[in-house]
Amino acid sequence: MTRGSRLILSTFLLAGLVGCGQDAAAPARGNPGPPSPGSQPPPAMPPTTPTTTPPPGGEVPTTPPTTPPTGVTPPTTPTTPPAGGEPTTTPPRGPLGPPLGKGNPDSMGLDHHDALYCGEWQKTTKPGDTIYLIKGGKVVWSYSLNTSGGNEYGDCTLTSYGTVTFPLKNSGAFEIKVTEGGKGSAADIVWQYKEDGGTEVHSVQPIGQDQALVMQNGNPAKLMLIDKKAAKVCTSADMSCVKKLWHPDSGGAVHGMFRHVRMLGNGNLLVPYTGGGGVSSSHVIEYTQDWKVVWDYNVKDAEPSGSPWAAVRLPNGNTLISGNGGGWVLEVSPDKKVVWKVEAKDLPFPVQTIQGAMRLTSGNTLINNWCGPLPVGQWANAVQAFEITPDKKIVWKVNEWANPNLGPGSSTQLLDEPGTPEDPAQRLF
Image (tube, rainbow, N blue to C red; front, top):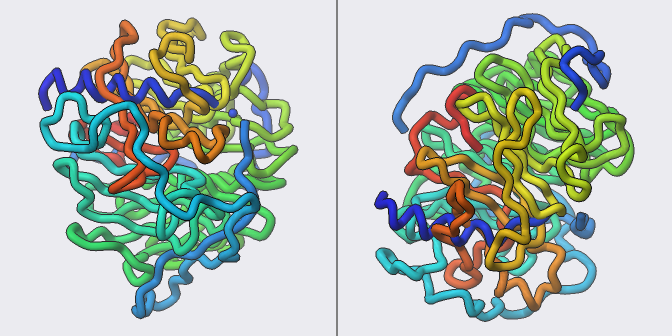
């Protein structure tokens, strides 16, 4: 990718920012739960190639007349759209730029980077909320639900071995086989975590080829390291597939508790407390696997508004934190100094809720803007993602609301960045 291309992407991403810790010596918050076997952190994987709460409701995946693999239950939830209705036609393209086109320096689409894209509450996307795999500016694979805006994605990863892991708020966590040149169906689902009643899942991280880290919002909250080989459909009560179980602080509304929770290369767990009513709310805390606090940062020390939606440990040891409804991204050093920050006022376009963030090898940062707080009729004017330089220049931004309608931006994985996504030591989003 050319430097010019990277510059265009940064400009796009900045338009979408807006948004939901203890000292190292402090006792761990939350109950670590019963001890589980194999307490040693998993080894790092070797490199390989490769705040507005959405309305209740649900959706089911688009299911052609095919049969899912034995034992796998496709997500099923009510198909009634959320209250308030949705537009009967795709909103017109916003005024931010010409349509997606490879090599167009003014393009507002995903033609500057190959990427995997998904977002929460895609209520204008038809036939339903959709994960898009885009290469060379074209959609080469997608997976859609049957309805729009009830269930939701938000943490999608394309692995080096040809699958996508994703959460569904009302259903659990899934892994689906990708065949480029077509659309995914329930028959392609190869693994599922079935969530408990009264809970939500917004975060799943593949750990190597055989494990997954799943964060289940609930009272109590459950963070689980799951052995995918042990059961094709796993539940939290099945300790044959739940290798380790931790209980982060919980309390308050289930929906807002957690988004992107990550295992680090050293095996520790980085937990952004996005919402909920626990004592750790608004903190980003790094725990060992025996639930000792090794790093705790309260975002309120730097930003009075917002909360940590995602946290990414960078190769330099700093932590990149996105600010949810606060509309900011912070880079914080191990000694809790803010060494870089971008806020809504720094951007040449409005942002609503800053969600996923990714640090690129160029030093630029990719940022996702979730525009859910806007009236639906104004969504087509919103930037969904953008790339920004360290000196806060916009390189590239995405405004793609037709052909395809990407929907609000939550999670964008750029595929032209090095590293193996399922290796915690190499993951930068």
